[in-house]
Image (cartoon, rainbow, N blue to C red):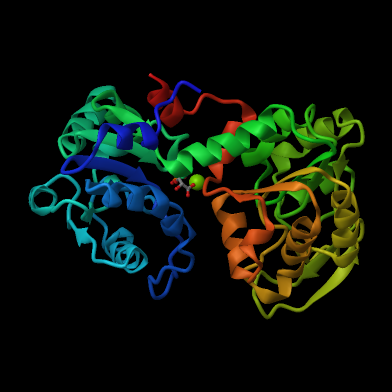
Length: 399
Ligand code: 3PG
Ligand code: MG
């Protein structure tokens, strides 16, 4: 990989220099209280930040949070993230209440050597996500003015052609941070020559989101286990009725074709937990996957499926898992995700958990993170990497 790294930058000396770090601090927030429900992405960027502060850099961190529409929107403020980042760093973080305005300028100007500032949400500015090169470029000019060097440590956003990811590195000396480097190292072993058997577990709600990765993975894997909301479109393609479960009608034919071409590699649920409503206290039973009652919806995979998936995972030497098996946020429908996660953790395989949701599930279910080989901070990014796509953020670092 022809990418310069944080160590290269540190080797040049950063003491007293302003370093702009793009992080992915897009953490899940509680809908009611706005509290951070999983700080994994904040912790993941600490090694890069402490290396820089330890070397005496003035560190300017920027990130997006959620999907505000190009204008300030208080529910997506990074202020509480700045507080949490400060706690984790064991010192305070200066917070700018805008991204490139007066507050940002004075905050950056006030930075002492070894201090950290966090700018307000990048997506409060239309230029960040604009499809127009000039509009993105103008915003990138303003951001780039805050740094003498640029570090990309936002693995979760490298698949986005956004100003802070794609255009800023064209304007400043640029390197990959520790997190981006580690993510790419791990994921490239999966696209290269993984130890076999190589088993992939996919969940999550939509087949349409996962179609490209399924196509790309099928020739490479030995087994592909499918759960989560997207399994119902596959079950339908097998001719089963799925009641009121999540269904992408227009994808049924595609799923049928995939099953026909999969040489038996795809494993689907044999039982599901079917409920009478999408609610934590809904009445529910385990039913065979070919016997879902017409008025019920599947919200998790059943115990027999968990056992079958666990058996398929047992002898694996490489495992990639993306996407929950059910609605794990509701305890009644968390057993599938928990069971599969535990089965993965138990193997001797090299295990990679891909994605914001699956990583959050591991932590929310209280599983030991250290029993997994690597927990990726990127959902879409890790999937697009496995698809073999060119990722704008990585391409920009290679230039
Ligand atoms: C994510 O959570 O998927 C990343 O932070 C990227 O966010 P986005 O999907 O809103 O671009
Ligand atoms: Mg996303």
